[in-house]
Image 1 (cartoon, helix red, strand yellow):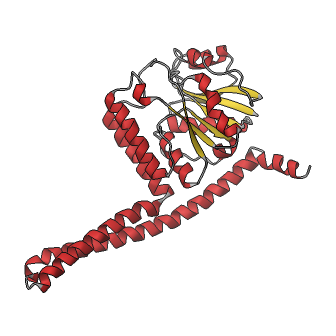
Image 2 (tube, one colour; image 1 turned 135 degrees about the horizontal axis):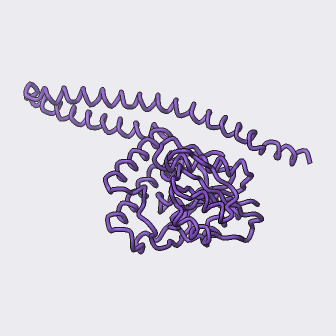
Length: 323
């Protein structure tokens, strides 16, 4: 059983050593542990520090491409290197490295394919009151959107089985954390959470530049993910609400009409027509988007099969079947 711990890095020469030293060198049930950095266009000595620490693998970008692109590039590299489990952690030593053993345990025992570390948000001193509330609210929205019970959706401290990693797709360029949960929930992938510890803050978050920016970009990711993976739920809800409002206004008009006062409420009749038309159009858009989603799922299945061939998993499976 091979575990690769990947560390996305962007100018992390000051914190990478502390992060690496905190990572486990041995875990029960794991035969090999290797380490990989995703150098996301660093302009400092991050790569040199990684080499001096003995980190075996690196994915290098010539310019900064963002967290989502870096995460997926790291996943691809880990799979090519034969990882059975991939763990993602941050280079700022936010997460307690010893708790990686907790992350991989549900995968080793066959209880989950994806495991997300649940931070003690309420007791984290460097989180402001507003940030704590936003983290809880955002996680609740993701739970509703994905149908999962993940208590800490923005947490980047995660473990993926090889099977789950091969099925990952991230389309937004902001962050992988929210979209992958929505994807996992809609594909019925077994997702678990385990409580983990955090370390004192070493630097300010580069993803959380301002409350407004974080809320706006996270909301965009969640909405686009729901529309992509469960479009009928999104468009259907809006369409039904518009139809109900239209019917309600129409009934109000009929009450006045049969009461002999219909001529004074023509605006209600016009509003009824507009709401009903918009409601039906939204439902039709949902049906069209749902058909597109079916084709996307077929393409994802093809992509998964191609990855199995590319990474040699099908060859290994055939060898097992043929003895």
